[in-house]
Length: 262
Image 1 (spheres, rainbow, N blue to C red):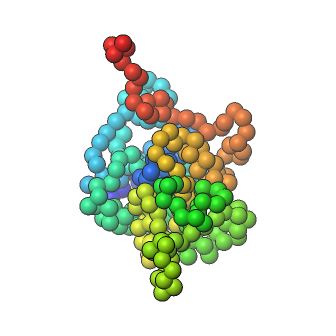
Image 2: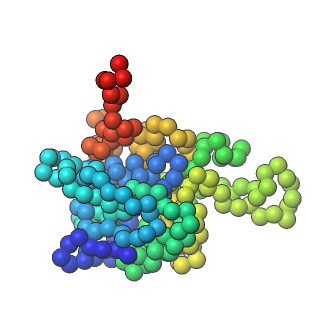
Image 3: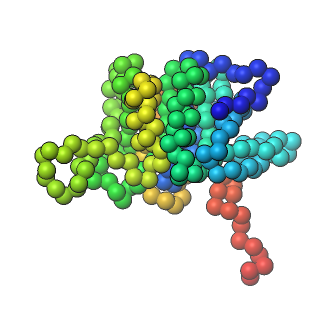
């Protein structure tokens, strides 16, 4: 359930919601970090659930010593009223046995909040692509029928590539088998997309084929891809880069090597 950190609960009606899927390389989460940090979004609440591994930490978007020691939780909601934009940042893995319950919680909250559209930022294992997915850009999208009615022209103008369906049994030529949607390493991406189709929720998935490692460049690629559609920044490709890297990225790969080792 959503718990507001303000005296009066925020109104999300007709807002766009952007959220990550906990997926390979954490590309979606890193992209959301860039959005929250750059737009200086305000924290307005959090999602209270037992579906995520419980954890807490200091403010990942600290700008001064005064706010650096604020405690933050695994699933928090941020807001930029002037852009009619809300962001859900998920910082902890989903407990595997509670994946379906978490998807149901998200679907219920999205519907009750009245978001005009939801965009899920995700990723998928590059090494598990099939031949047709090896060609061209590593970026793909999925869109529910409900959102396609509203955004068909915009998506056509962007010339994005839709996520291809692949053979259920690669290598076999059984014509009776329908191609399937397959997002290896994508966490709840496929399930949330399928649930949203069933519940008639206007939702899009933007994903990137990648591998585990230093996924900061992948995050910039994905967030720039999103910006081509939502226009959060005028021209993020201009130099110097307009996306603001949060302070928490200084420890993205842990702290430095202890001098005592040498």
